[in-house]
Length: 418
Image 1 (tube, rainbow, N blue to C red):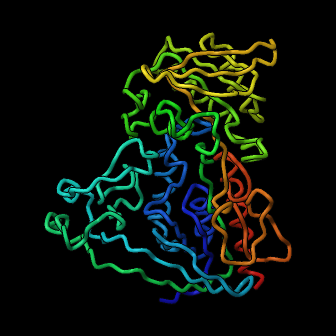
Image 2: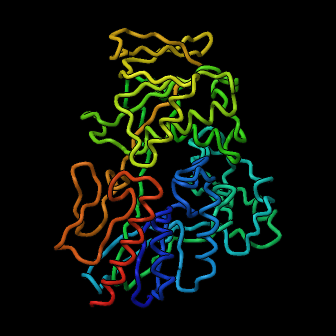
Image 3: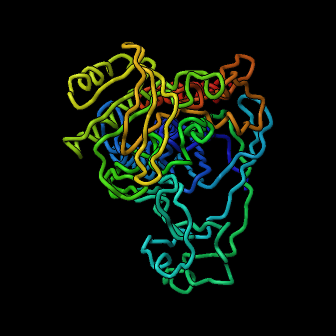
């Protein structure tokens, strides 16, 4: 397959979606590719996001409708860039299209799920629950179509899903395909992933069940999460009464992420409000180095300070230990303002892990520059390629969308001047 020259957007999170829609709605053809089986990126995993504290389906649903109604946008999920050649105005791109094993006939009726005998960890919920080998990526998935995990599916040995599907939507013979694109400019919206908290030895993530990350808490608080929105301890499903947040878990640390991830303090304060709303008597302690809530978000911090059940302690956490009998956790830290050592017991500890760009591990197959932390940098000598959102630097949703609009304009300029 070969397509006419257009703008290529790589990454179907909020940044990529915004750039694609902005360019298409002023008359330019856009191809949007996403490596996952659905669009939405990290925003789709949130319970609520700033500035309005909306649920993700609020903003995403509007954008999905704009994509669906605009014939200038073509989307490909389970798609990866393999090769890029050429220059601004004339790029040749080869895209690998991985098989979904479910075609457009799918109505998301669940008949295939009911008969599938194989379970898998649900990566959308960070492994806190399971799906079948044939699964809907999430309740608000776009496209709203099932997908089969080919690493676990037994294909022809089982084929129960094929028999159960009355719409002929299951095709276990799908193969990898290659898509050739002729594009004039490329927008890199490759996003971020949570820093691997298991690398932080003293905090016990991966060792103690009740030490979780900030993104895991978002899923616990979400109505479509593993506990239907109820924040419960992973070890025993118990309600929580004392919760600790550990800021800069891996961030601002030369051994891990040396930079500030910008949104972590704000996210923890927001998540403290989730807990206080569900459990009015619960106590929350936030251990911090510095609280950073830029600009208009300062009022969120000031509101939290007035809550007598939320306490801020300036001090780095030295270690977290578990009582094997109860699975309760003891946090050892130093209160630098009072110069006292603290040993506090909690039901749950939430690590505010930082934002690591996906390009920290996966490098773009083109002449693209990166900074020392793996973020894409602007290089005047490399024309026609533009980074947006958290591929550029740690950003909140609002700022990511702003960067996407700017990149869409630059991508259009690349087409026009060539």
